[in-house]
Image (cartoon, rainbow, N blue to C red; front, top):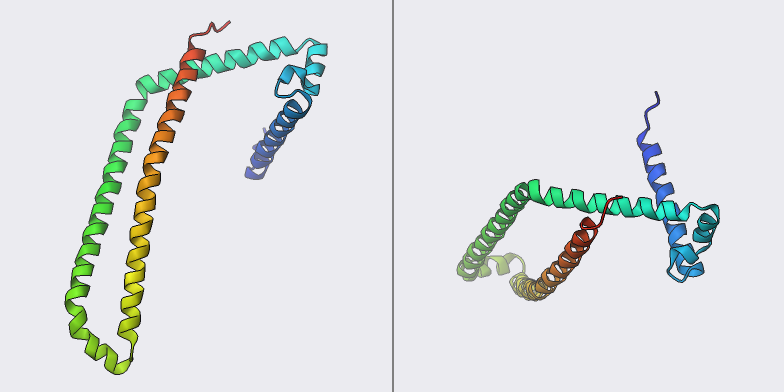
Length: 179
């Protein structure tokens, strides 16, 4: 018995990917988006295999949808718990990072005036350059935070819509007869 090496596995994935791309291209160019009208679809129809292939794809979709519903029913609660734990960890980390930032900002603002004279003795105008750099970094941080906050809400809405459409399709396929 031969074992597949990791290189052979990647080659197999690459071959499947290339066949999928070729079928998609054939369907879009020759069949105007309809597989049965493409060159491959016509060849399969002439051989009498196309109806069987379509039935097999339907059975696979129905079984996959039912399996996904089973997954959601029995496994998803544990995934929700773990994802909630990860979300809480990320929120706590961000909160801690914000606290460290506020502490550093307060320390920097309080001790800045005391250390400016010493720094300027050894490196003239370095304090002005550092202050300009720090204010520029803060502006950039605030702009980035605003952009991320605005885009985050849009991403949440998009993900919610995609999730809703996905579940509608899963429910539709799961209701079909298997054979």
